[in-house]
Image (cartoon, rainbow, N blue to C red; front, side, top):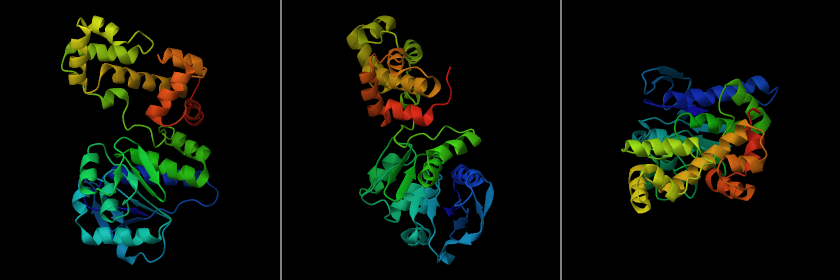
Length: 316
């Protein structure tokens, strides 16, 4: 059952719904019956002006549901003050096998008390507000999705597809989830602990043109000498001045940026090549398989070998 409300994000509904519908085409038995619900049955308008029909009024739900999925949207935090909506989510969730939210739908779960004492995530723009409003929730500001017991939450918008694929994998195995992702031409089921952002997205864009060029050079050449002295020389600055200016304009230190960029490079190599781990380590600038393992675990919360087994797409 997918719960919507006026102003919801249409992709938060459509993405997971298509994941479950595609799974139904591949599962001979034990598939999913999709149901859209709202406080009142009838037409519900999404934030982009499109309308959908909620066939079920939440107050009429008396039988246990398998999965209760609450969508998000720009209006979700405001709907946390809707006592009827929050009350019905809380009531239906009590008998559901599992409860989940997409994006800012986490505000509705939190308001219902369903995230108390649990780890949860939401859209990166809303994590600070979620943490400030609900101090009993352990907010994970970076993960694509989080499963804590029978309650799942996901980051913004299209991360709902990753969440739905994770639920399909929990029900039917990773192989089926991968087939569903391939059918939808989607990313091959990112691990929940993976960051919401690649390195360039997580960093600020420098105001200085030379630093913007240097940032691009780092991302394009992970195996080069990217030490602070080497980067400072390339930027034409003293090491101390370079470190200060880079950190100020990019938001993180040069060393941290380089490590993140190399972790991204290693991830791409694992996904798109059949290179052995020692070659992946060399070409990503991480040097040795041991450093690759430690860095990969720190940034992606999964081992390099595990990541390749789950997300390898082709050999080049």
